[in-house]
Image (cartoon, rainbow, N blue to C red; front, side, top):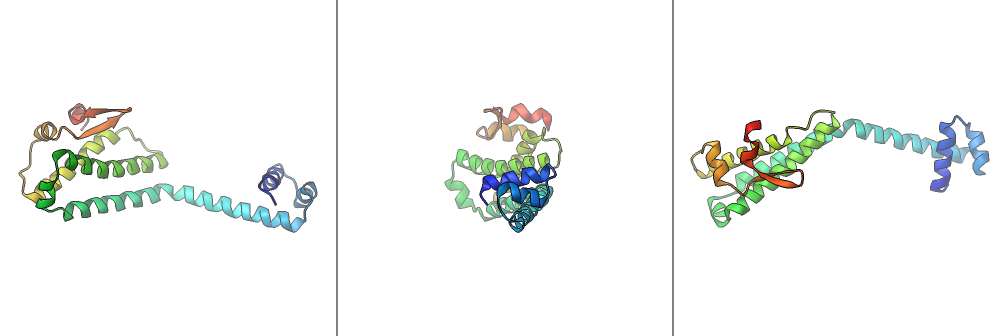
Length: 172
């Protein structure tokens, strides 16, 4: 059966046509129609099951991203950090955090939950990653305002443009 014939068979079935009538309309056997409709029903059930679990799958992906982020942070040596510019450091952390934030946003959308706090969460995650890195390297903790002033390359995307972290501090 061609895809067009399959689509016609499904449409006829949805309109209440019997298998014998569909077979007659498509000039094929009842068993061909019956087998094809069975496959379509199985595929529809698989899609429905996947859609019902999509939020959980995204949550698992988010956890894996967080684990990779932690492994990367744990593997960074003082030499590695010294070899990077401040912009490179900020870029690496921003990319990891952005991947997690995007996945988090998708998960919340799948679950019908609010996503309005994503920019704030991104900033909090970036600060947490910087704190982890600083602690690993023995760099003393800084006040949030010092961190924002020092890492001016860290920005969050908002509506196609970028806004410095300072812009988002009030929402934290």
